[in-house]
Length: 37
Image (cartoon, rainbow, N blue to C red; front, side, top):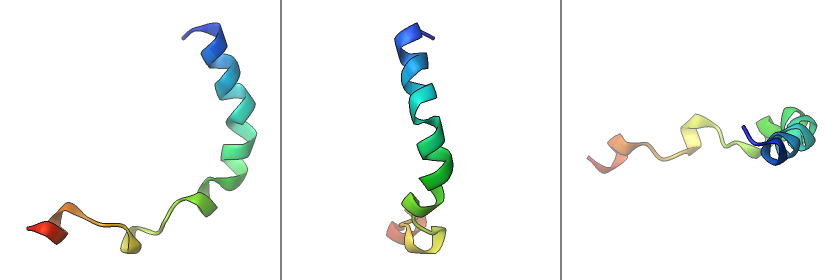
């Protein structure tokens, strides 16, 4: 991995760890491919 990319990942690591669960929708609210079959 390039050094600049590694720096970006390290800089957002804390934010993602603290906020990821609030940013993701529950599975029940997300569309599923079977909805269109």
